[in-house]
Image 1 (spheres, chains in turn green, cyan):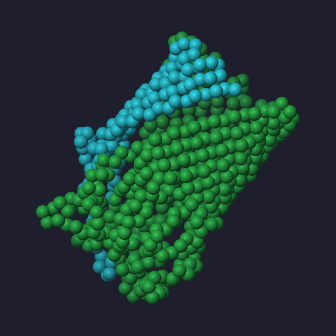
Image 2 (cartoon, chains in turn blue, yellow):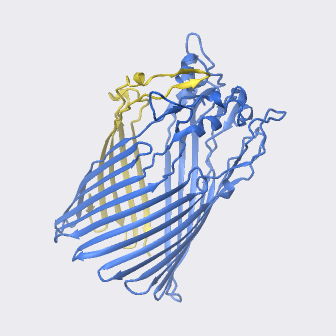
Image 3 (cartoon, rainbow over the protein chains, first blue to last red):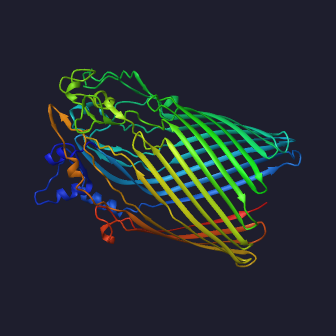
Length: 498
Length: 121
């Protein structure tokens, strides 16, 4: 929000305030009614008291029904239908803020009156070795609660003439859009023999949601009224057996398209019209982060080493190719091995290990840490940039610069909180000395790191559970789980306004 | 715990206890100076920031009691019900003899339940 220690203590903008702060300032012997250029047209102390008194409770109800029907004339086909209705009603807290020059953060109540309706229709047919399944689902989500409003102070910053959303007045905020989803799912499986099966699946889904209407006194209109996302996937799997070795190979590819959700922006940041507004000639496209093509491949082998003992090896590959070039392409290679054994009539155990190598895990290659310019004599890994060197170039005026063409492109370190290496080991063993008594011991250890950003995390989760049935009418279960997670990460603190 | 109380009535009861604790540490390292308009100054120094050596260690406890049951009127027709009482006790706020610098009263209790009817045909 751009607050910096120097500017706040010096009394200049921006100043972060809340309703509580405004209420306390107004109650001073010499009342203060304006902070950072913000003056509130309502009683801030009363609004704060109301916030504390609000009961933020949401009640959820769900009704479910499923039915299956097989007609005597079509004994190979079973028809399914299902319905699920979920409602959420009550009140939640919504938070908004004004900006430039005062950052006034305030919360208010938001009515929740949501209804989700799912209808599914499908059929499963068995024709000898071929099984086919189809399901259609329609989901609608409606939010009928009133959209909350809050007071937005005029943006006082001189560059805010074209910040059309920050007009002086009560505006709607925190609106939840209605949405609708349609999906078709088709799956077929062919049993060549009891050991060899081939299956294939296809899914197509469309989701549409209503965009928020702009407030009535805002002088622009949206290009279209709905956001739309399309999902399509193809998958296949082949499983077979060679003696003591069982193998399966699978491949899946899916794409998520959201062409109607592209954001358009302008590259000309200096030419203003008679109303002092920047041009609406939007010549740059910004692709949504969700648009991507994903390819997955996997192979699994299970080998029976001895009676009651199996060794499993697995390899998975995933490639995520995103339309937004800045978010890049992520590739994941996963290797798995596990050993499962029935050591005796009373004791069984399983141990497994997984290793993942991930390249470009949704990273932002120029996310943090200024670079170029002058190397810092005290810290050779860091550099600083003088914004004065960017005056008068690239849409910057003689006296001011824009962040996005002076500060942001000069960052040199990746900013991501995702790992590029993962190791995970799991163990569990069950001891059942009698038919009515069993104890299970389990543990999971996970280590993940990303050296490019100085991140690492270690997780330990050991636990134990007992099951005991003192009679055929009573079952008792007791369990204890301990969880510990250590994380080390680099934190980058912004040094500038804005 | 599951109990088959009578031929038609099955009862269950459960208790869950959660305790969570968190702690953290920051180490500030020397960093580059900020230059604005030809002069160089930092808003604060890493030596000043490292004078902060104690932090609010968050912790909470949670107790959850559940009772429920299923009654089979006939082999095909049954009803099921469950009720839960949930207590969340935060040790964070100074009012609870917990840590300073943490704002707000996070303690609370909740009751919730469900009733269902089923028909197998």
